[in-house]
Amino acid sequence: MNQRYCFLFKLISFSLLCFNLNCYFNPIVTSVLSPPQAEDNNGFLGIVAALSPQSIQITGQIIDANGIAVSNGTLTILSRSNPSEGLLDSVDLNYGGRFYMKVSTGDTRIRVSQSNVELFTFTLSIPELGIISVSNQTLAGPRINNLEFYQIGFEPNYFDVFAVNPFDQSSFTAWPSIIQITFTEDIEVPSNMQTYLDTNVSTSPTISLDGSLSSVINGKILEIRNSSGFQIGTNRYTLGIGIRSASGKILSPRSFSYTCNAPCSSPL
Image 1: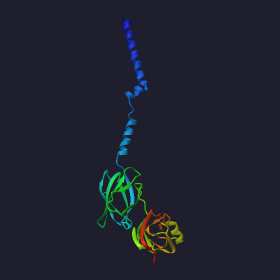
Image 2: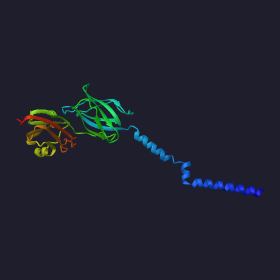
Image 3: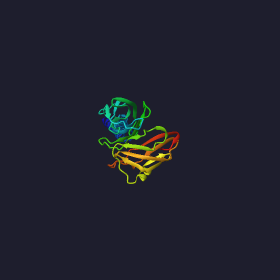
Image 4: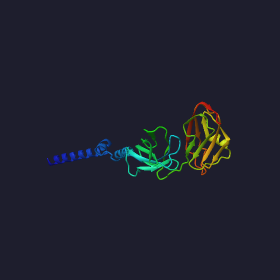
């Protein structure tokens, strides 16, 4: 009897050992008993990071309905959908109406003012990194030009148009003989004005520009003489990147337009 019990005990022990070894080396059983935690946790942390608000740097230029930079104005934050530490409640515009601002992803409601007078408000939307839009603007006409992201800790320096004369989006019945474009700093003086205008000032429809009578005035003003080609309706001017500052900065993209109503007489 003792030998029989001893044999049964050994048989049961051996069976349990085999079962344990089979569980240990069976990948299906192992995954149930000891599921991998690190990978799941990493995935969860990735989702949390993607959904969390992020702080980013943006820049742009504020211009009023006349195409003039809102010089030395102020942007005041009215609300944020994703408040975050380290964000300012207001930032100042420089001489050229340009701002440099740290914001969070989501929607930011902003007020634009100059000399303590509110000009308009708008909503800046950044649903994710690399995508930005403006909406819910309370006043038609003003624009937020050249919105761009830039690297934190590095503030780029831009060369912008400060104003145009006649004002952007002006209407008249006689086409102006002279258009003046004022820049935020001195411009590079071209050696051949006609080639310079033909290359860097495009018009739609095509307008002939007279380089022989055009010039740079006081360093910052490009005075363009129109000659012919203007038509009834909207006439648009677009400035090219070949226009540079005296220090070599490339001009930020800019266009402006005029409407010529009948009889749309030639310049005097």
